[in-house]
Length: 277
Image 1 (spheres, rainbow, N blue to C red):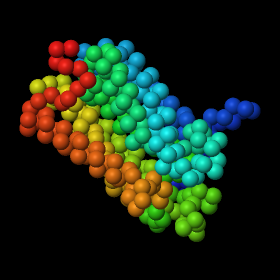
Image 2: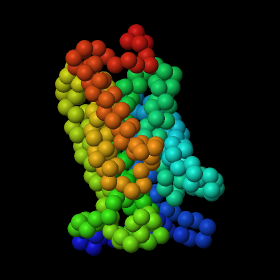
Image 3: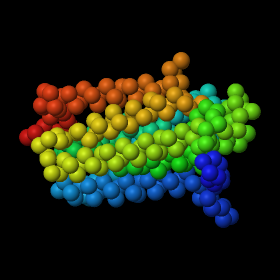
C-alpha cells in the first residue's frame, strides 16, 4: 500500500486457498527468472547466438544460483538457523544473498561454457542485463516480507515496519529507509545502462570486446550496493565488517582490472575456451 510516499507491506501472502499458498516473494523470483530468460534469449538472437543455448544455461543457473544464495545467507546467519534448522529450506520466508547467487551461477556458467565450448564471458554478457532486471524485481520481495530495510528515518518516502519485524534496538521506531526501493531503482538504472551498451556494441563490435558488459555490471551494481548496504540494519557481518560491502569492493576491483586488461593491454579476457576452440 502506498500512502503518499509512505510504504507499508500488505503482507507476504498473495493468495491462500486451502493448502495452496502463493507468496509474493516466490512469485516475484519466478517472474524475474522467466523474464530474464526471455530477455537473454532475445539478446542472444541479436548477437547470432543460439537462444536454445541460453535456455539450457538458465536451467543450470537456477539450479546452482538459488541454493547457493540460500546457503550463503544461512552460513552467515548460522547461529540463528541452528536454533530452528527446519527453516533452512524455507526460502519463501526470505533470506537469500545475491552474492551467493553470483558465486554459484558463475561456477555453473564456467562448467556449462567448457562443456559446450563457448566463451563464458560471451554468455555472461547475455545474462547480466537480465540479472540486473531480475534484482530490480526481486527486491520487492523484501518489501512484502518487511525485511532488508534500513535505519530509522522520517523522510517522505519512509517505510513502515511492523513491531514483530523491527530489530530490538529500534523497536520504538515505526519508519525506516526503504532500502529495497533504493536497490530496486539502482538495479533498474544498471539494467538500462547495460542494455544501451549492448545495442551500442551491435553497431561498434570492435569497440565493445566480449566481457565488457559483465565487467561494467560488477562495477555499477557494486557501487550502489556499497552505499545501500551501509543503511541496512540486517547486514551479514564478518566481525566488524559488512560482508556485502567487502564483496562489492572485490567485485569493483575485478571489474576495473578486467576493463584495463581489455582496453589498455588490449587482450581477450582469460576464458574457459581457447580462441582455437
